[in-house]
Image (cartoon, rainbow, N blue to C red; front, side, top):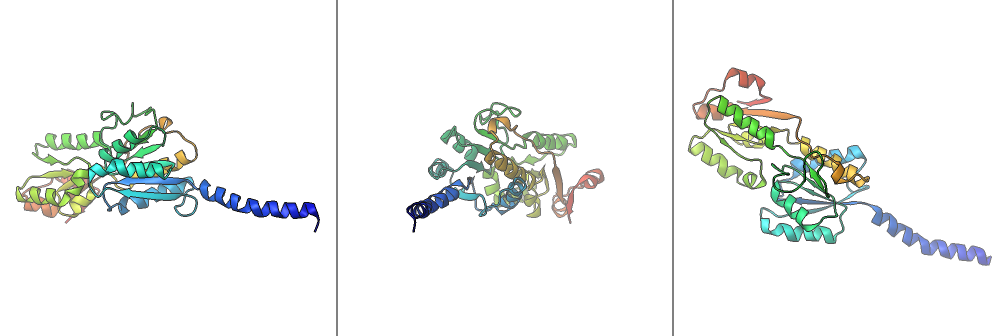
Length: 265
């Protein structure tokens, strides 16, 4: 065997493991930070959004999951684990607490938050149009306020539940109390009404996770969070539970029923 050919073969044999290692390392990693394990409703549309940008979990992108199970004091440690894992993007769900934990832990890793009521007010971003820094995401506060204002105009005394992960963790308790004390209550998510709540009005549950997936994919392709405006929902749904209304002795106006996206009878 010629000396040059032997050197070339040896060089190729040595280089192959290096190339494989580089290819394996090249797969981007998304860190997922949540409050509860009930995230199937979030992850499915999130993955759909990712796929629109060309990323499929297990194919050309990896996911690292960290869930606090409503132990809010664990978020700093969970974020630290994701940082040690050297994730490329951190995605947070279930509201304010995980988003703030991620922001406080890193100023370099891009962060995409979801379901945060007032991202400017709590200091997550400088403004909705120009977030600045390494954080962007998705908010619903103005539409919840509008729903409450509509109920006031209808002269209906009601409790309005904020779209926060903590309240979601107390869903059964909130539903039981509203029923026990006959308090008409408006909720931010359809699943409250499906479980016996009176009314929900808010962003379509799959829309925000899907768009979060799109944003995450764009960041993986090089976009900066500072250049991605914080988006507010554009698609909302009104869901009414007629059985609960009847139990409370309430008559839902026909105009409201006509505008509902879904009526549970």
